[in-house]
Amino acid sequence: MRSAVIVFPGSNCDRDMAEALRLVSGRAPEMVWHRESELPAGLDLIAIPGGFSYGDYLRSGAMAAQSPVMRAVGEAAARGVPVLGVCNGFQVLTEARLLPGALMRNSGIRFVGRDVAVTVENSQSAFTARYEAGEEIVIPVAHHDGNFQADAETLDRLEGEGRVAFRYVGDVNGSARGIAGILNPAGNVLGMMPHPERAVEAAHGLADGRRLFEGLLETVGQPA
Image 1 (cartoon, one colour):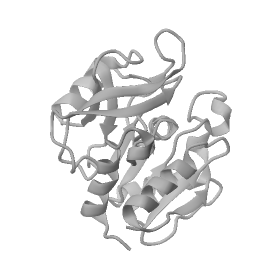
Image 2 (cartoon, one colour):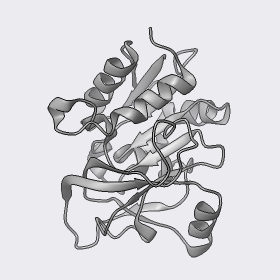
Image 3 (cartoon, one colour):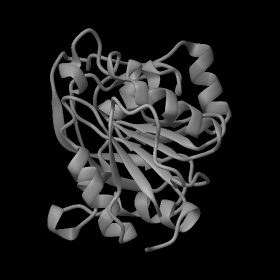
């Protein structure tokens, strides 16, 4: 599986994402600086990692969404290339309008950093192929602006089209309907607040995130 990790000023989970992809696929991803206007050819996956792009100034992900590379990411997504945005990456995807809704300040106005339980709502995407629908998994979160909000019509559409990928078990940050991750209409763009790249080895204490990357490997790419 040939993958790329997009790196913005302030990204702090880019190496975590790169290591998770290397461990599962056997191939190190390309690290692509945000000022690039083109992506490497033949990519099977584009990952937008967590962190605090541009220091979260203005609005989380808003400045990163205007980086030159995001035009190329949008074009790749339109061609069907899978795009995974985690935490700040989810925020960037909403700001770039590749996903609907917005990530607001957490309810309680505090940073949330802990392991959380989420249910797998859709197991039919490339990202969730190794999970069972309704399965409960545990993955870490670490965010201050992870409160997913959208208007009622958008929320109903996400639910009705099976585009809610993950849902929190219990209230974590105030997200509407407990939404922790959503898909685009084509199912090839996933934004999620929990960090699967931090749960890929037993040494981490959690390994439920590994299956997300294994599912991608089986669906869109083969080991090197």
